Amino acid sequence: MIREVITYPNKLLRTKSVDVEKFDNELHTLLDDMYDTMIVENGVGLAAIQVGIPLNVLIINLPNEEDTQEKENLIEAINPVITHKDGTQIFLEGCLSVPGFNEEVKRAQHIIVEYFNRDGEKQIMESEDFLAVAWQHEMEHLTGHLFIENLSFIKRKKFEKEWKKRIKQKS
Ligand code: CO
Image (cartoon, rainbow, N blue to C red; front, side, top):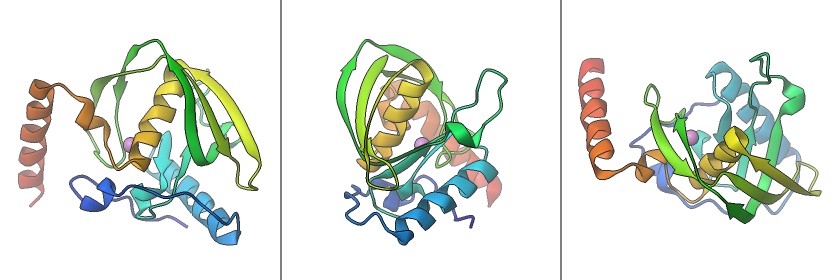
């Protein structure tokens, strides 16, 4: 089932999510709905808080070399923790909660993440480049933050100006 993606400046996006305690049907439905929602919205990642659920749950599904998004590459992460990060990279990011806006963000180049899958089994994943960006972007949502908060003062001002203009055009 497709859920509504909440967008900036909705205050719910600032919620600090909490750990999942039960790996039950409700969690599985949430994960399935998040996948359906991400696909129709043309996203490559989604955190539960973006559909209004303040749980430490995220999904990532990057396109492969042929630029297609295969479900077999879907990552479902519950209660993720970054245990190691190093290096830096600058990547052009976007977010389904800040639609139509892209900006460069600096993040770690290489990370190791520990998390649980939908069945409560512990996983460890090492990632770099775009995948490491996706992990860090989605995990930032779980702490109640958005990628635009990483922008320089000038770029943030530019964003706020563009955003106000767009809201005006819509109304
Ligand atoms: Co996002």
